[in-house]
Length: 278
Length: 98
Image (cartoon, rainbow over all chains, first blue to last red; front, side, top):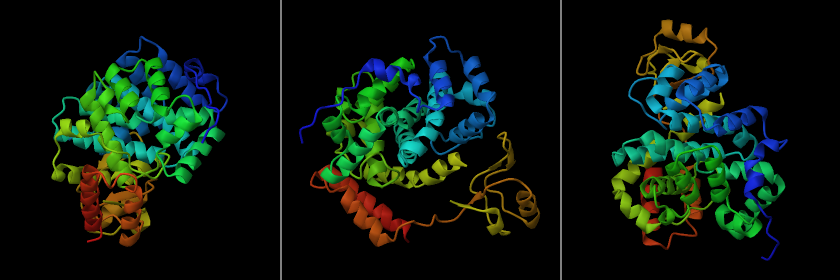
């Protein structure tokens, strides 16, 4: 179908705080993350001053998406264990939760499922910082959240189009907008000063072969996304499984049993996702 | 693991997840077997439920779950690698129904 593509500009996306539909709590976190000089102490303080955020962050770090052997019962402990980048990502993840629930029901569950799957895959591969991959998976679709905030009507139409045309939301986006959620997410991740590997996971989770600096991490989230969609957990904008990139899959070298273990683990998704809502 | 409300807990059930206070303190740890006394304490707290060891109830019938699986793989099932993943998934789904 030929239609005029809706232009999405970087400056408009970077200026999301000007949108009236963006909740105030998210605006303050977004502005906080933009500062280049965030320290672990400052971020710990910000979280511990907000009881609702504290509860959500602790629930998340103690869930199957992180899987520490002991319990983490304080923000200061979580911050020390996880480090600045993971805590920044978690803070953003739990603060978009509300928007996701309201604007695109199912996207939060999808994101949590991907975080759990990615954590399990990273564990199988003995990756040094599995928490970073888990948080990257939690945020991989952040571009969709901002697109639906900025262009609600058009994005809902894109979702309907994906259902009618029986295609992926990623492909439907290309017929409506000049950019897809992966590019929008990349702009945001850069605006919030996230590390390069996280930016690459967000940019290339549909095209892992293009990732130069974080191929393995991107491959993990690419597979996690496919497994979670395949199992029908949550809703990412369409009801189809994307095609697995062979190179990405081969680089991970997982066996059928490994994949089965990941599937067993992601059955916990609904529990974790519901738990955050309560 | 299954989450149940406080009026449905019974002695002998085992906690699949620790029960935490609002501030994140562990009140009862994972694996604790619930006694009458613990149940009484739990019911006096503002909890929306606890997680116990039990098979999760499936929202869909097995037949519907497998039909929907076919639907989701519709665009890619002809690729051998995707067909393999789908087979693993089908077996996994069947195992959830015992």
